[in-house]
Length: 535
Image (spheres, rainbow, N blue to C red):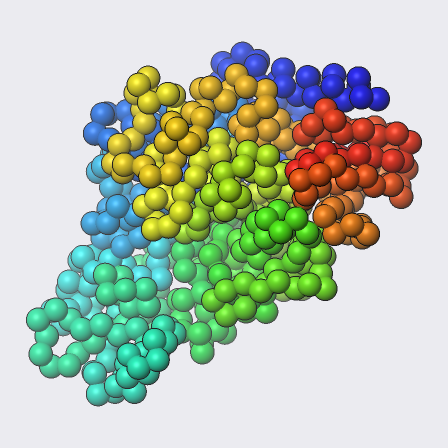
């Protein structure tokens, strides 16, 4: 059996050494069963991805040039962080909703990227930031000048009317979203505007119908004239303050209806970072939400070497000792599906707002592979943050979790961006992609092989999940079932080999991260920080 496993692993390793131009010519394989949004989506910060004009900043032409890489990796969609004009590097304070930032290229460059992505079977989702605009947006400048056409695009109050809220914030440090009032520069009349995140991002007033109509028209513009496939909706929970949650839910139902009028298959995924009971109702209007609990649970389980579920409690997480990672995942999914049976569970390990998964797992490649194995064998729509597949590192502040992608060794890397001097992901800490592509044991090879397996498996892409209790809390075990086909998946969270006796009938190992994994009858040996899929 060990000889079989070695051969199986060798076959998977051979896959990554195939002609890299094959996918350029044919796109994804015709025997794949995965179909986005059930497939893998890849989050890209354009600024850090690939620079083609030598100005040190990633650009749309760089995205287009790297489409063959995305296809070969197995990506079925990309989510682009904000691409619209903005004075900030992150571009979440938009100043023009119908244009692109000139640092990234022209609108024609972007349209070409969308066209080329579609021709290669890749969907394109962009960040749409509509909870707030930038304070430099013409709307806000005119609103400050009391232009009657734009005054009500924003929320205003006099200092006296919100004094109690302001005092509460200043004396208690409360940052609740009813206390975020800001002075208009140069104003002496005590007039304030509302901006939940900071003064440079004034919140838009969705009680004002002309503003709603403008936002809907902006959405239609990107879907019809530019051709994107959907939106990642930033700060979806904050369209209205927390005490108006039902208005929030109703807005997203209306937004979805308006978008579906022009694109029936539009895809809307929301950022709602909140406990399950708060976030679940948002699925009435949004196709998908990011699963923050799962991301934290995977990290905590690997670092503690015990299966643990996690829930968001206030602004932080707490561990639920009575539930395993799998049980917590299922409980969470059931809660969301009670509002929307077709809910898409957007799973991920880390994103542009969080410390990178590599750093959270001590820069240990084996732990990174294990995290990827858990993510990519669970149900849902997995999201990868650019660079996770090569083990990029990063800890806050935000610029340092958005560092340049490492394509080649630095001296040879003509497309590596230089806008930010990296502190975490350097050639001395992360092996560049080109070297990992020829390494059968690299983090990249693991991601690529597992993504290929997932795309070609109905069970892993579309199957249901059933928890399998394990006497040893260092094991995470579950079954994936689709029709008559079933896989048993076992993850070893620990630094030592573990044995387990499978209760179901199994015939072989179809994937393992180590050739030391052994199946004898129903007895399986799982090496440290590794995963085994049984059929």
